Each structure stands twice: as C-alpha cells, then as structure tokens.
Image: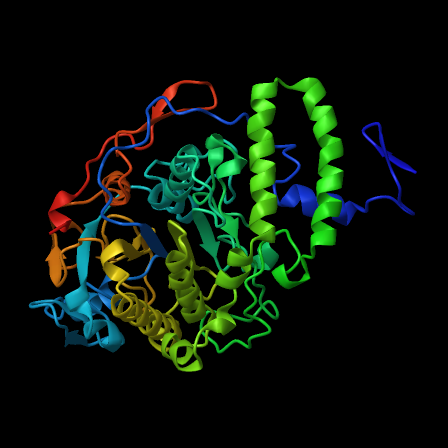
Length: 477
C-alpha cells in the first residue's frame, strides 16, 4: 500500500515522478496556483463587436519596409530589395511577396503607426500581449515570472469564468506551442502570454508540437499529419486519455485535496476545486478532442492554408473560434535564429517567412468570411517591433520599436483602409501614433470587456487591466 499525504493507495511501485509531473503540469494539483482573485468591477456591459479574437503574433519583429510600409521613393540604402505591388486598398503598396494578401486588403485595415520604446524582444513581447511594460529592465531576462502582467487572453479567460457559464472548451488557447518552445530545446518561456499575477488558473491551454532537430523549422516546411497532432501541453494525447487514466489522476488529486483542506479556508478550496474539475472536464471533453483534430478539415482547404506548421495552426485557430474559444494566439516563433528577427539578410524573408504568412493569413480571412465568421472575429496580425530603416551590409535590419505595423480585420474594423501616416523612411509615425496600451484597449473594447476594468492584484489592490491609452474607435465602422 502507498500512502500519499496520509491516505493509502494500492499500487506496486506507487505513482511515478512522471505521473505527478503530468498532473501538476496540467495545473491540476493546484500546488502553485495563487489564491484566485475576485474582481472589483462586475463584467463589462459593453456590447461586444467580436465573439472571438485570433491574435497572429509574428515574434521577432517583421520589417515594415519589407511588408506593409514600402517606401519606393526612399534612397536605395533604405527602401530595401523588394518591389512594391498594388493592393485592393487605394494607395496601399505592399511587398511583392504578399500577393495573396494584396488580393484581400479590402477585408482588412493596415495600422502603420504602432510605436513603443521597449527595443527588446522579451520585454516588447510582454508589452504587446498585455498592454503593460514588463517589470524586468530591457535586456534583463528571457523568461516569464509570476509577477508578469496578465495577457489579454488571460483577462478574457478571467472574465469568461466570472460569468459562471458552463463551457466545455477554454476561453484562451495558444498555438502551436508556448512562445520560445521551439528555440534552443524549449528552454525559453517568453513572457506575455500567461496569467502572471492573476494566477495559473488563467494561463492558456497550450498545445505542444515539437521540431525534428535543432536546425529544423516546421513553420515553413510541409509537415506530416503525424507531426500535426495538437496535443495539450503537459498531457498525453487526447486519443490516449482514457477515462481510467483520468480517474487515476482524480484519485491522486483527491489525496492532495485532503492536505489542502487542512491548510486552507473552504472558500479558497471551493475555487481550487472548481479549477481542478475544470481541467479534468477539458481533458475529457469530446468537443476539445474534436476541435484539436486538424485532420477533420478537407484536404483542399488544408492545402490552401499551407501544410506548413504556420498555415495549419492558422486553420486550427479558425476551428477553435468556430467551436467557441474566445481568444486564440498563434505564434510564428523564433526557431533557433531563423525568424522575423532578420539581422542577417532578406533571404529567409523572401523565400520562407513572408510567403508562408501570406498564404496562411489570406486563407484565414477568406475562410472566416466564407463561413460568416469574420463579422464576429477580430483578427490581429503583428510583431512586437519593426526593423531599422537603414540595413546592414547583408540587407538584414536591426531592432526598431519606434515604428511597426499591425493588420486588423473583422468584428466591425473598417475594411480597405490605412490608419496612420509614417515618415519618408518608415522610421517614425507622422500621424496617429498608436501604443500597445491603445491596442490592448481596442481589443478589449471589441470583445465587450470594459477597457477600464479593474482587477485586484496579488496584493489585493484594484488594478487597471490597462494603465493609460484609449481604444482606437476610428478603426471601427
């Protein structure tokens, strides 16, 4: 007999370290879950424009001069090697390597004037996904901390859970991996996408797709169906998650509950139990299993998105919002140097990064529109910074957070327009500069979440979900 925290359990060798890690890694044990906080303000009464958000995060910093802010009249040492092409938006010239997107710009708005002073990948990534500057100084860290600000997706999860409505899917999902998961053997967990001080109960459900080896980049190569199994991070595959295994985990968890109940007040435990049961429900949910099965999509549609990891993850995002998920983040992550952080040359931009984004993004907008989902889904595509107007000798560009674009579509966003003006070198905003705080409040506004909502932080102080900024209402029709 095995006794876990004083309760006997029949077993030969007892629970393995792996069993405990699987239960704990799923957030089921609650051993590191902070006290669940209560909101000072009731849920927003704003009418939502969007049921869901798909946030396409191009981590590393796509160059504005090679994507959506080409400057054909700039000096040769600034304008870059790519030629501009016309789009369906009057006056908007975009990269020759974005032909599919050029054909659908009548469905989207290009916001050219994103700007902030945080010229650092991790800090800027946190800033863009939360609307708050990271508490770590620039260059001071690469991984998430419990003191980080909660992401927009985590706040969306928080508000959704506050309604008390029964759901068999989470409100917040991250695809295809945690940010940093395909870089240097997954040692990085970049900040910005988690619940932070709000608590682990508001972290995203994250899938886990690995690469073949150190030099592999599945984002831009065709992937097999065997690779494209969107298993939940920290758990065995949905197909292998039998009810017997779930009951075994629940038996283990009930023993930990006994210890917890001896230490905590019943009100806290009720909340703890609710999240524990919520996690088990998600794993056992047939709707979760179905939504995460990319093979249910027609082959022709999968081909249209591209069989690469980025295209299939954008298609998965559409499946999830169609199933009822409210906030889906899709990373186009840095994979051991081959990323939008293009210091070295324009080679990978031209041959891999921009074409795969172009294919997946245009297909996503068209697919959502064909299904009648674009009107109720806000799509946002952007990086955390831009690139320097002047390139280096190999036509790579450095970090430049002073100016970079965001592309928005759906949920009442005015289609076929350009918002904001930039200078002749695509280096600075000239009109309508837009901060990460502005963007976060705009996304909350679209979701019907009051941008002035306040939530108690870890010290119990009412805290604005975004401090400063304003929703950019001119983006909406």
